[in-house]
Length: 489
Ligand code: SF4
Image (cartoon, rainbow, N blue to C red; front, side, top):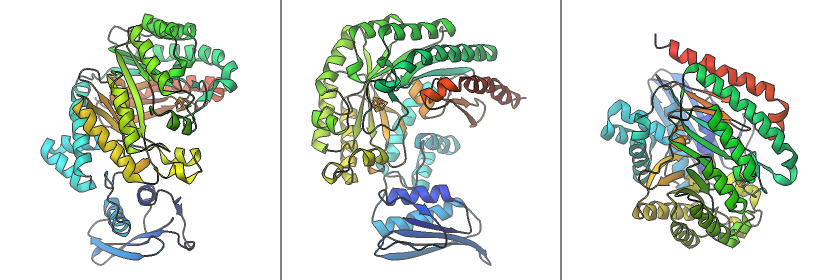
């Protein structure tokens, strides 16, 4: 799709909106070019005139063309993007469930509306301003209410610790993370863990000097249970020995791939005080698992849950994905029933990101489900109804660009088993100190909406070779926190 802009620089939002309506046509932003034959295009222009600001959009789906104009006394990004949204929606007949929202954190935005105007008027303002559907407004409102206690209980000096283990036994075909498969990265594991220890020590020293309070630990990846029982035990032990744990309310490890689980590893985790784990089926169809290159079966998931229960784990999350190639709404319903039968306390329902599926499958038959966004929407709607009926509440929600059906990822939990780390990191309501490759430290100013990010290198090999820079960046945390505190006085 060709996007032309005149008189403004609202490229990011305009481009994202074009993607919502034409997800299979890469957006190129260019002036002085003409669209190719049959290529969709849009022109978004604004200029100052006698009556204020004139906004104009012309757009075409490659066949039909329409134009819209609007005038307002002020120059405003909202007016420009709203006009573009209206034009593209009329042109394509698509009414996106999340309306004009293309950002990652709709619940955070709803919270800001509610804080400004109160629950009723704030929610209505959110829905009307951003053209969010009734159903998605209600979902976001339920998430906001479910998070309230965890957010209200946060103290200014609280933080969560994230530790990244960027290794997996093999690489799934749809994966867009930085994880390395063991065939290529086996030799890097021990050096990585040694440097991770150093980073943990540095982080502990800094948070100690700042007087911060650890309330939650999350070891994610990748697949942390790719490590041996001994390595897992050592890593968890290092965290316990390095950070004061007396206020820590949860300790989670992503066991992810069921093919990595053994009783020895689970007992090592249990013995190290891990209370929550995640075992991720994605789907319970062996055929779909094969389509997405996940080298395990549905039976492995059943056995993984059995092992985890026997090891004493009662708090277990299961990740699922809607919109997988070769899946169907009926297949997804069957998956959900089977997973509910395994008694998880959390179920996280993701929408497949289109970029991944596009790399994943070239054959039209397998991709066809993904190209029917209504099928992914049916799966997601079913999950909302079925999980609600089963006693789960949605408690965190985030979006990515290019998601199947332009939907969302939602974490559901049984009462009392919401993972606080997920709330604080996804909703950006609390500080997260991240260690390991791919880790993004998010420093939330407890006295304002300000959030500062400190990035680690993404790949394990970079993490190892440029570790000194990682430690230097960690040192920057102290200065940022001190700036937060100075603003108070
Ligand atoms: S288990 Fe997860 S992180 Fe690992 S390769 Fe598969 S999708 Fe990627």
